[in-house]
Length: 288
Image 1 (cartoon, rainbow, N blue to C red):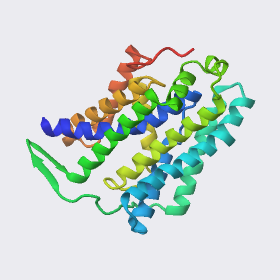
Image 2 (image 1 turned 120 degrees about the vertical axis):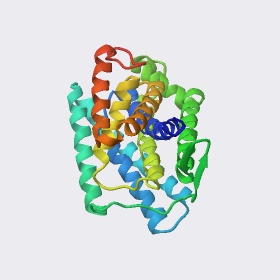
Image 3 (image 1 turned 60 degrees about the vertical axis):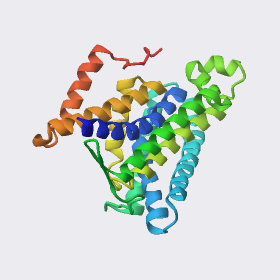
């Protein structure tokens, strides 16, 4: 049981970090970023290049992943999504644009890095074996870093001026604008932060699972599952959804390990039942 809980907490921390970026973008702009998984993959490949190929320190590689994705996210918001939102009154337009960017990133990543699985040297060697828990030290470090990043993000959103402005923007875009909040600026900052979180978690997990050009779609699906569990556009819901999914996956892989890939079939079935009872998720509110 201790091992299952430890695995669930480890998975939940990284999943929550992935979901935070997606839910931040949705809360600010009402945009479902279908390219979120591809941003994760790109962050992983940047860390692979800087840390695994160039031999620079892991911290430098992680910083490079976060900054690069933040810049890409800011440019996407300014030149793509902002333009479409202004010119179109249909929400489907932003969804189509988001899907197009996902396909574009898939093609670019495949062209540059190819199809092969890429990995990097372990950042910490050794295995923790105590109290009924067996876990490599690098997983413990990655899980701890993910929790630190989550806590830092929550504190930043709660107490910083930028965080308060973005929360006001998420609660009521028109009222925030009337109160002097610069909507375009903070929408761009929010999109950049969401992309940065995806890049950072991609950089963290390339040290554990490696990265390849085909995992962007599955990562996006997991991110959407977490948002649906917790409630769209709710930061606390994204965190809760991440840890719930991580624990479900840990329990499923332990209990159903003899049945191959049945775990996610059961998780999807449970999610459908849950959404039929609570269509807005645990903490979400009805749209509109």
